[in-house]
Length: 515
Image (tube, rainbow, N blue to C red; front, side, top):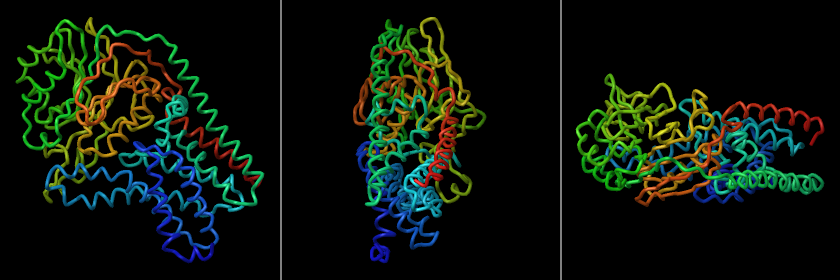
């Protein structure tokens, strides 16, 4: 081992970066979850070995390199958004390197805080490592604007049974448990821990097995529920209009005709149409009145449209969801609270404007952030609709999507435009968050994207119907399961802090036992 330690190129630089990169393949759309049972023990092994030979700063570097490899491989697709306009192409190398480099700082801090680990206490060290890592992950999803993308727990995205625990504990608590489970094989590296290894093996099998069995029972119980019928149809529309058409002077009338044709409204059939974010980028809501005849002649008073569109008020532009009827009367409106930095607004806008830059999306002026997220309720005799509106990546925030903690909504409507990221892994990662939110909140999700994955997801995270990012079409829903209020929907991320207290207590107990 001393010879390996002396070879700093391999042990300090290449190995942490490599295992970080490999770990990213446990995430959607690959979901090679077994990778984590190898890479996390190796990361812990490196930390233990360095404890004998190296100084404090090296720990930060090891963690940073692990994080840099992880985020470089899993977030490269962000640079696709810079390929649609020439003024942004020069920024591609900077975005490719700087975003992973910044996010890797969080992982660097995680490993730095392990500097004082007692290398003789293997199981206690696993708990400490898991606790610190998960707290730093929570901070990554919270500070500044927050970016809780690609938490380690998303490795379980393909195991719907294993995810049912989210309804009780939420994503961050599940993330803490996941890191612990992935790290447990670390004790198998040491030859003089045979008794502990046997115990750990059974603990590992028990934790994975009991969670899977619990999830299976939840799913089985849900499958026995009777399906209810709406008094109307819900149509999720996914038009797949090329993203480049919005950059080059889009024709709103042509796009509207396209949407109407695809929606295929039947005047005698009560229907809610859901149109995605960004398809009418070239006009504001008020300008939509210019097309009153086109919409009124195509739709009837048996129809309402939920759509993503820009709104304009007091010289401020908002990215909004609106509900309109066939006469273009606004029945409900919500303006996006969580804006994408550089995508929807420019930090230090005056400075960047002077350098010739603008936000990536259509137009030069930054969007203004909405102040509140209210439930949109529509009740006009035909339709009784209460939904939580979420635009684009607002759906990635565990425990923070329902600001007012309101329980009187029956579903979540998420509209998005994932075409900025091309045919990459980005839209698949974005979609996986919808599954997590459905289970956490116990609500059915209607997800409409222009370019991206559109779907109807039930309260247990099952994808009932789906259109892939390359598919143009309509999803029609007539039946549904009743929504439920989950433990997590009531208490949110307070549950994560209870888990932190439990882990701290367990660490003190095991420390006394010198395990």
